[in-house]
Image (cartoon, rainbow, N blue to C red; front, side, top):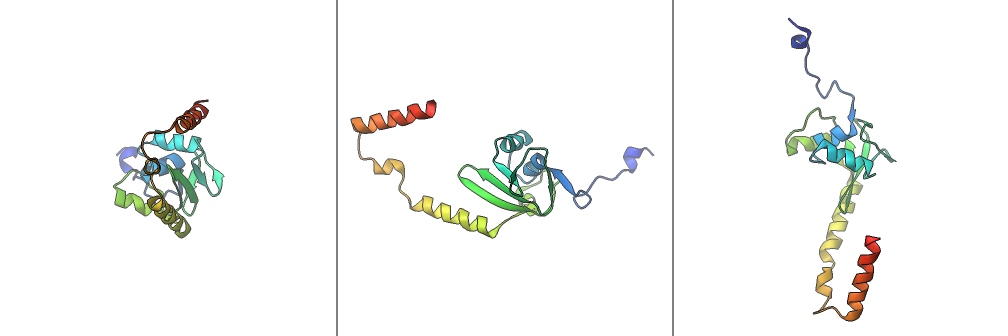
Length: 142
């Protein structure tokens, strides 16, 4: 019998840590590992209060801050996942902190109550509105 046939696959209990980009992918925060790595490189993922690179080892008990779109979530790592699984199983890998959940709900409520920008404007933009819009667009392109 070969050594390959005798070896058993590693389980999540046997693995103490995992690369951050692999963990983000397995926990379904990102669709691909490449996207997970780019999120880390762009500084949108922090581990225990410090910006993290994709190769950073994530351990059980670590606190991650993940910025996605307008939402910022703080999650605690409960398990390391060896492979990507269905969404309900992937959610078992982490737990969102209570403060993060309350903050997210508060922001969602504020967005729901605030008027849409287009609803404020009435009719065709005035010359002043058009110039303001042009200045804003020019400043973003520079």
